[in-house]
Length: 490
Image 1 (cartoon, rainbow, N blue to C red):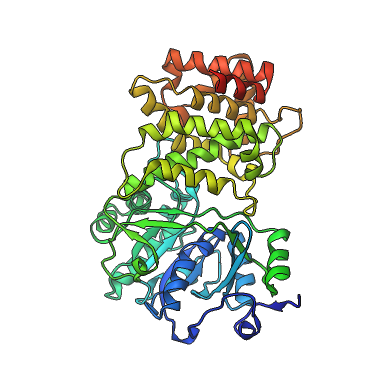
Image 2: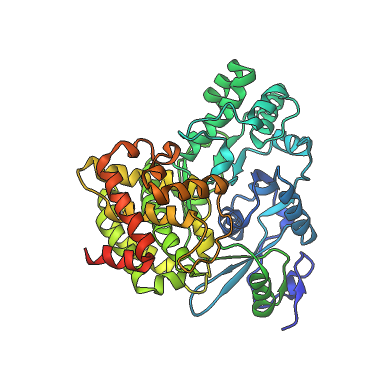
C-alpha cells in the first residue's frame, strides 16, 4: 500500500481511515493539556474529536504542552504532521483507524517554562488537564504532598521561574488574577484515586511553601474535578508505525494503538464551562469514587495479578499470560474470592459483568500489551492497587491468600531474575533498593513486608507474615508454576 505522510494537506488522500469532517479553522482552544503521551491521544483527544465531528463545542480544542525533555521530542513529531494523530483501535478480527484533529497546537518545551506559563495565562484556556503519571504529583510514601521533594523546594524558592508543571500553574494563576481573568479548572486524567484531590493538594501544597495565603486562595477558587479514566494503550514502537503504514497507508511518526473499550467518569465541577462530553459517552456523576474503586481494585489490581507470575515465567505479552491456564485461573480465583466481594456497589453496574469484560480485554491478542509494562513501577502501584484490598479482606476476618501470594511473586520478581535464571532488567524507579531488599527477604521473608511505604503496618501482623513467608519460601523452592497450582488446588 502506498503511504502518505500525515498532514492536513494529505487528509483527502487517506481513503482507508476516518478523518476529521470538521474544518480545523473552525476550532479554537479551550483546554491546555500537559503530557501528550499515548493515553491522552487515545482517550481525551478521541472524545473531543468525536464531539467536534458532531459540530459541537468547537471552542474547546486542545493545546499540547509538557515540561520534560521527551515532551519536546513528541512536540517536534506532532508539529511536523500538524498536530494530527492516527489512533488505531485493535479490535480482534479487524482494526479500525481514525485521524484525530482535536489538538491544534503544541507549546514549545523550554527550561524556563515561559511559553507554557503564557499559554496557561490566556483567558480562552479554561481547563488545564494533566496526564503526568501516578508519580508526577510529588507524593510522599503516605500519599500526601511531599514538601521536601527537591523539585518542590526549588520551585518554592523561585516561584517566578518554576521548573515543574505545578509551579507553572501557580505562576499562570497569578497572571490571570492580575489580568482580571477567572482561574482555569485543573482536570487530572491520571490513574490515581481521588485524582482531583491529589492535584489540589499538590498545587496548594507547593503554593503554601512560599505563600500560604495564595494556597488558600487556590483551595477557595480553583476547581479540581475527580475523574476515572480507562483505556489500555500500549507503547508505540516499530510494530505500531508499520501497522499504520501497511494497514492504513499513513506515515505517522507517532501513531497510537489502543483497545476498543474506553471509559471516562468525572465530576461536573467546571465553573468556567466545559465541552459537552456527555454527548460522546462521558459519564458525569457525583459518585466517581465508586467507579474509581471498582476500576482500581478489579482492573489495575488484576493487571498486577497476572503481571508478576507472567514475568517470572518469561511470558512477553498480556494475552499470552491469559492463555496460560495457571495464570488465567489465578486471576479468576483471586478476583472472584478476594477482590470483587469487597468492592462496594457501583451505579448501574454489574460487578460480575465488569470482571468478565476485564478478562475479555486482557485476552485481546491484538493489543499486544506487554507483561513488562504491567510489572513496571510496582513500588508505586502495589500500595494503591493491591495493599488496600489486602487490608479490606483482613478487616473482614479473611486472609487474602491469593493477594499475599501475589506479594511474594512481586518480591521474587524484584530479586532480578526469572524462574529460568534469566536477568530481569530494572523495572522500577526504586529497582536497586528493591533488588537489595528481595535478596535479604530470601533469607528472612519478613524483610519484604517491612517496606512501610508499601505495606503500612502489615509487617506487624503475624498471620500475614506467616502466610507471606510460606509462599515466598515455596516459590524459591518450587517455582512460580508450582505455587500457582498449589494455590488453585487449595
